[in-house]
Length: 301
Image 1: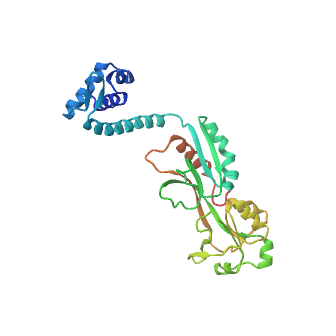
Image 2: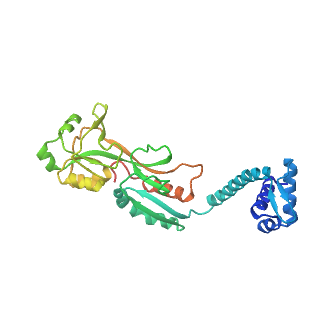
């Protein structure tokens, strides 16, 4: 007889408190349930159930075996459900966390296309400017700018963007323009508070030397667009990704602080919890983002 069926018959008898109800639950005859349980006891060489005319209850050994058997049966059920899910169209609620600037300017405009491709998925996109704990806060996926340092997450690199130090012409007219990295110590700097180590700017000198500049910020905010506006308003130098400063640079509202420095790139990632199995709705969204941003990046925003 099939070992898993024997386990299921025994566990169902324990769950239902008897052979009659177990047979009804499994959709087979009472004699078939009894035969499966007897075969299991014969194979194991021990009695698993105490049988009386009034009730059926597990023995001490049977109770211990029941705990293990129930875990095996639950795992088997999850395995069956996994295969079914993998063969079914992606569906269900997808909770997405994304920074406000990126969500408004780059993700919101393309969500309609994703929903049209996946009509059985509903999306709840939450825009915020703080680090979100995906699992504990109930998110399926997040889009993040910058290196992924959380080892509990899987990441898929979507594209890259360039970061540059920029300030307004009015700022440079008032405070002068830095000529080298060390000159930044004498300037008013603007920081983005929601990035790890926001007060540390990682720069590359023209020689190729990697520098980490620890700078005290004159203004710190938790929103990239607000940081750009402060920059345009002449409040200081900001270190921003291209997708934020691109239009302002082309309109002459900001200028690069030290044009001779090698450009700094920053990855944009889709991140989601680790696991042996990626839910179809998450995989569909990651694949969609990868296609959508394949021709974006660097300074093409």
